[in-house]
Structure formats: structure tokens, C-alpha cells
Amino acid sequence: MAKKKLSGSEIIIQCLLDNGIDTVFGYPGGAVLPIYDALFAQNALHHVLVRQEGGAVHMAEGFARSTGKIGVVLVTSGPGATNAVTGLTDALMDSVPVLCLTGQVPTHLIGNDAFQEADTTGITRPCTKHNYLVKDVNDLARIMNEAIYVAKAGRPGPVVVDLPKDILIAETSFNLDQKIQKKHKTYRPKIKGDNTKICEAVELIAKAKRPLFYCGGGVINSGPKACKLLAEFVKITNYPITLTLMGLGAFPASDKKFLGMVG
Image 1 (cartoon, rainbow, N blue to C red):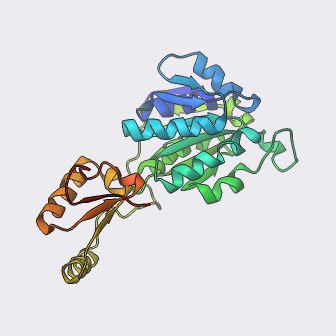
Image 2 (image 1 turned 30 degrees about the horizontal axis):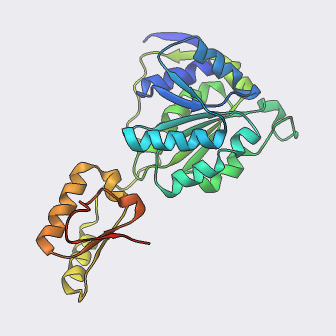
Image 3 (image 1 turned 180 degrees about the vertical axis):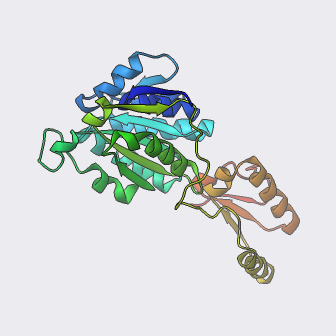
């Protein structure tokens, strides 16, 4: 088992690369300068400089939507993190996988009204799938891999990892041969349909006097196969269909049974 002494910042970059992530959208600030130093020392992870943190999250959303990968954001503490809230809320509502790395004041200053300190985990709790405050550099690798898994697994969404500056500087042993976890001990999203509920839905559709398929972004997130099956289902039943904004593209707009977008 190959182990190496790495700083928290280097561990973050290594975990991103190990998970197949090659692009980060960010804006520098004092609390995350150690990460930027680590970014500068390598060429595998590409950094896209933005002009404002909110734009970074929206760019990460667009990246995630167009590539199918997770969008990664890097912002500093305090107002840097709070500027990201609108984008995080949008990602949560639209089910877009985003990992937002936020800087934080050193652990011993948390709760002391330090310069550019904000309760990032408290502020982002309502607009993320989950969030973390890292208090021990030995937990950092696990939390990073776990956060990426939670953001992508089940219904996708944004996850925040709040990173105190002393954690980014501290060093610890890192297992270079670590295996990325494919499951989580407590987060077990339901990804298979309930046959009983499906049968109930089929019965309701069959008995409906004026049936209409109303589909959304979940079909898009489920992939091309789901879109193809939806088209086949509409063809078999010959029922009309409409799509939400997030669902556009899940069914051919040229088809006569497509009524257009709702709203």
C-alpha cells in the first residue's frame, strides 16, 4: 500500500483527480489560497477563473448538464461562500450534481466572528443535499470521496464541503492506492421503481378519461435509454405528452403528440 505525506490542499486535488474530475470553476480568496498554490503546482486539474462566485456555480451547472460529469466549484470564505447560495439553490431545484468547496477560517477561530467568517454549513443546509465542515485533516479524503458520491448518486444535487484554512495546510498520510467507494453506509437512494406503485400508476392511466403524460428533468437525468422508452410508451398508448423546461429534449418536439412546453 503506497502512502505519501500530503497537505490537505494536495489531498483535495488528488481526490478530485481520482474521481475523474478534470475541471474546477473558482475565484481566489485568502482562505483558499493553499488550494490555489496546490493547483499551480500541477497541470492535470484545469481551473476556470470566474468573475463572481455565483457565476462559478452556474458555470459548473452548465458543465454538469452538458458533460454528465459533476461540476466542481471553489470559493473562499464568508461572502465568497454566500455568493454561491443562489447557484446552489438552483442546482438543488434542478437536480444538478455540484460539489462546492468553500474556504473557512481556521478551526480555532470558528465562532469568534473572525474576518470573513460565515456559518457556511448553516446557511447552505436548506439549499444542498448535504454539507460538511472538515475539522480533522485525517477525515478529509473520506469526506471528499463521500461528498462526490452523494452529489451524483440517486437524485443528483449540490454538496458543500467547508474547509478551514488550517486543514488545508496540515499534512497527513494519504493512501495513493485508495479505492473510491461505490456505496455509502447511510445514504442509500432508491434507484429502482416500486412495482406496486408502478402497477397502480398503470391502472390509473388505463382508466383515465383524458390522459396526458407530464414529464420533467428526471427523464433527462435517467439517460438516453429512458428517453427512448418514454417515446415508445407514448407511441403505444397514443396519449398526448407535455414537458417541463427541465424535460425538454426527452421527447421529440416534432411529434404530433407533443403539446409543447408547460407554462
